[in-house]
Length: 406
Ligand code: PMP
Image 1 (cartoon, protein in one colour):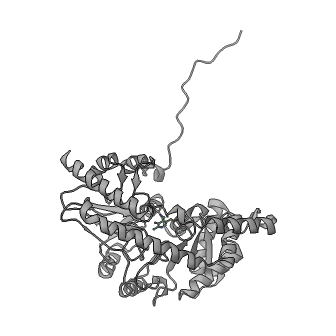
Image 2 (cartoon, helix red, strand yellow):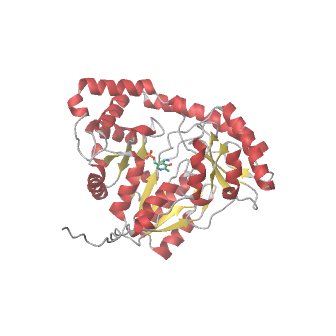
Image 3 (cartoon, rainbow, N blue to C red):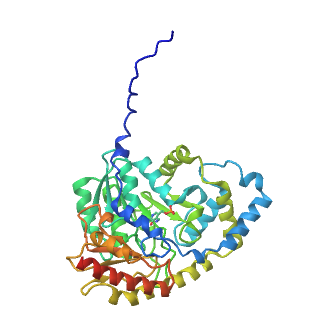
């Protein structure tokens, strides 16, 4: 005779880590999930124009490295990155006025990985991070996951206010400032040279790391390039500069770079080893091959020209689409522009009705670490043709009108 144990409910599994529990779902993300429908004209996505990818050039680079050095391209590689790509990245930074050697650069799996490596290397739970107001969403996530206290620095249409920054540094003793000084996500705005110098000076005076995130700087279709904060006096030993191939080559390659002082770079390399050992070898070698055989700058200039036409198409359609009293900016590059509807509008509340009109934007509120301005919204102007942009803005106008009446 067998004796069966009385049925016992299994004990519950232990809880998720506190940092994971604190990251909730996002109602905006749920609404925007439906914008994957093909009929939706999606100004929300932030996707580079796919028809402008140099698919043939990239395919040729992959074919070459797989045919000529398959044993290397398909093998494990060093955490810091393939020497050919690090050398090419250093040469590009040097050509833009920031003297850089291959040893100063870590290849990352997208610049997003650079952000999380820096958060791991620099932040203890409870440390204070200063960010722009509004700020790139996934940076807020990376700092939140590291347990940081995030505080927004007051900004105007040109970006960070250096005086407000200095005051906040005095009050909160932050460890780092995170900024996207050129064609910022979400606003498209660019920090002028004099403010960059002032930000570098504040950091030097007060002992502050700066993360300078620059995925959009090369996409300039108007005006003069502004030097990186990293190249101003006092910034040399305290700026981590993030670069990305996502907007100039293709985001699917997941290739980015981190340029930082030696001690910080070493710490990030250790964090990267724990995260993914290294960035895919074949992608790194193909990108290096592309840079050697082709003219990436000429390709980027072509892309920027088209993006400029698309920005103009959006600027042309906005006066009729947005309600009287709305304002918006006119970025000289990048992918986004930022609009503000009259005070009484709430772009989060209006989004479901707008999406029912088969068009989408991202409401401004989630981008604010401080008090949100609920009348703001982000529009990506690069993914659609001028004709589609015009149609999308007609739908946006109708959707906003219907949403207000509802
Ligand atoms: N930083 C900013 C400001 C971004 O907008 C993005 C992409 N949307 C990233 C970093 C991450 O880019 P990636 O990982 O593709 O290089």
